[in-house]
Length: 344
Image (cartoon, rainbow, N blue to C red):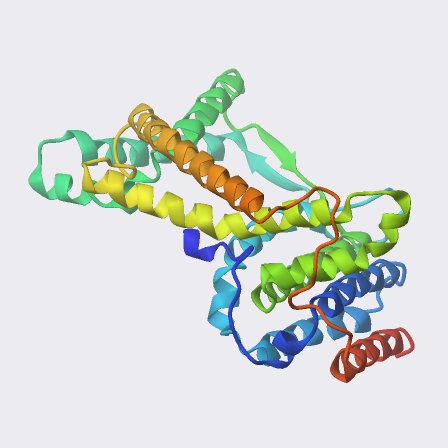
């Protein structure tokens, strides 16, 4: 699970994206955001989104990072997007043009009652797998995938009980309409544009952190925020805090993994047991984690003091240099392609 967290993780390489300056990639990400805002004003104009998708795929290929690594870090986002796809599809504001209508579908209350009976049979079978003293059934109950349904089943069962109480006085043979469900042009466009934007911007953000070291990224951000110095804002201190936060993400992930392995080797079990037992195990993990975090923070503060760090001082640059021909060329090429997509 922790290996799928990519924020702050840098993949060394010598690809075109790796050779770009950090502020070049930040400018590209900012331009893509502006480009998307402009593209949303042109309804049913798919070319800008196709260009974005093509550029994101090209960026993954050029970066030299495996598509499998990118996919592993996108699975959770795609799952969340899939759960929200159906409500988005039926989005309407009262003026949207309907494209297709489902229903209304007549549904019988008898069908709901029989569905509740079927759910009761399945629930009884599930409980029997854990309670009956039959070795074959007990072996099945040890499978972790079967135990994962315990908490969802509690909420589903409560919902079924409430539903059964609500329809208790309805006579047999009664029906009720389900729907109509109207798919509108606004819903289809919102589904396509919104989800494309999320996926593309997430891919570009992954490429930014995977091909840029945290120090180079923060140096580029500091140089882009240089005009804020005129307003007497602490740009360097803000950059330092951001760098520490990014750098500590993989460190804290490693700390959690080590604590989990240490606790498991001492008999802790985070995958089995009741909800109370799992909560107690996590609480026991929380205290040493905080101790490790405070210890690392103290070591970092000591290191900064030993290097005579002063608040408000201007820091030297380690990675960021003058923009080269490759930076200007990539910026110009991307701007020309994206602007040209509006006229296609």
